[in-house]
Length: 339
Image: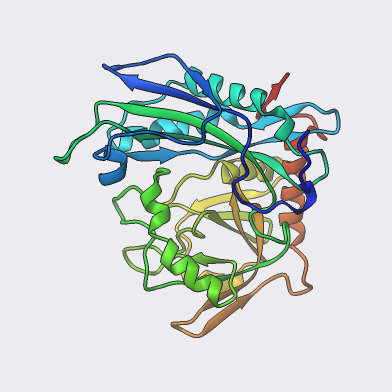
């Protein structure tokens, strides 16, 4: 195993041994190839560079107490990548190809899966890009599907600790009928300016309102929003929100804990009445929210008043992590064990 400071890893790129690649040419997928190169060679007129033909996924692998490595919700990520590809006129990556490539990437870099109880995990980044040259606006004829991995620490530097969010009413993450519901790079580029500004002011992330009316909660930048009120799990319903696989998993766990689930439009004004609020996604799992600030109206909404995550968020977080690490039985069939 590499000599890394596992307990103090950031959410940054770290070189591992190998990555997996597969090209789509002449209307069909080729063979998968293993390489140790970190570079991609492509034409300067590639559609991914000029017309945004790019989509990606993010999932994780965890080393359990039993030393087994578990990939979390591999099949759901395969389905979501297909949805993203379809939306921007790219060939869908077959689910069996996605699955084989991800498992192979983890197998070849197994030494980089952090130790149990280190607080770190192996982040897996599958992506699909248009590599064929086009000057006119049209889809590429050639594509590259690739998977690389690297060990990461918590997305928010303090891990499962309360975070502060800034509402940015001057920026939209996505258009109402755009591509906010799929995982394409442009959605993230659109958040960089407001996220950077929030960081400079001491906030951990940004909370966006809906791009049409500025009345409803949308997303927390790279994560979904959820709230708890009177044993009800509430999360926004919107065509401009990426369906988070972590959020989907938390909903299932919450239902099994006897909670009511409400997936609906969530008005900005409701922030004053929630018991708990969180940002959830693959990178952060759950970021319990301590404070939400809207500079435009001067309103401040506070949670976690004792400085600790709320009891229901904690219960959901612990249950999900127990499944990911194999500490509890995977009754849902969510993990894929890599031998």
